[in-house]
Image 1: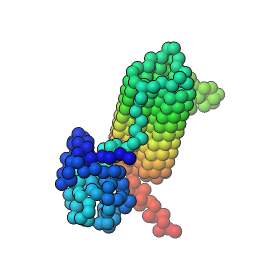
Image 2: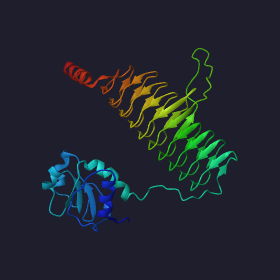
Image 3: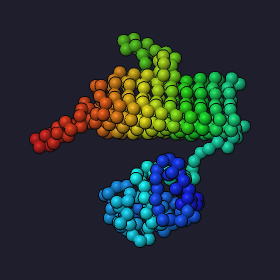
Image 4: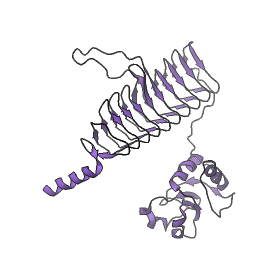
Length: 328
């Protein structure tokens, strides 16, 4: 069990430019991070959703990350830790309590197969029954789990975590990325000439920007010629299909079971809900939000919020839903 002092919480928040205010002693200890409904006297909690205001009044935690305007709702047993954005503060503080962070121990298992035409840098951990194939470079601090296949033609940059049962080929993974179990990156895409069904050879690769996360059993196909790319600080959920030549910008959030067809270009700060289908050769702008289960068949301009099939402005979609329900 981790014991986290308040001074550690304060330090990590200030390190990330979050101002924090509280009367708690720096030496005060927290044993865990819990929700407001399940916390107890040695826990830290947080409050960020007004719909749980009645639950907040009964909180049993020792302290709570909270906005100043809500502190009067806290009972006497719970100290306020005042921050402007409690949910963002939670994101940073949660890392202090995480006992499952994977970091390289610098040990390469004797049950690992490494091709002679590879370069392994310092402090790399490779677990049993993993194969490192030709023309692969693995840089400092990388962790690779068991039963994975890395290569050929792969560069994995510093401090990347690759979980078990992952396949990566023809790819460049930038620093601090997380590749979760079962992901398949860099395989040949779904490309052929339609009449004869003649297969089109793929010679491109996949590029994943720094600090991005790729979910379990997600597939990202290599490009035909250039790169299928995922931008920096992007989060791709489980069971997502990203086809060849797709380009996704920075800070993307893509939920589970999304399918993106080939050669579609997606901008920065895009949010895509679960089970969305996106046709190929489209251009989707920056700051676009696509509601779950939508079918996108046309280009989308910047800042749009769309829903439905075929996807359209969400206000129009809601009006159609109301109109159709009244007809019944």
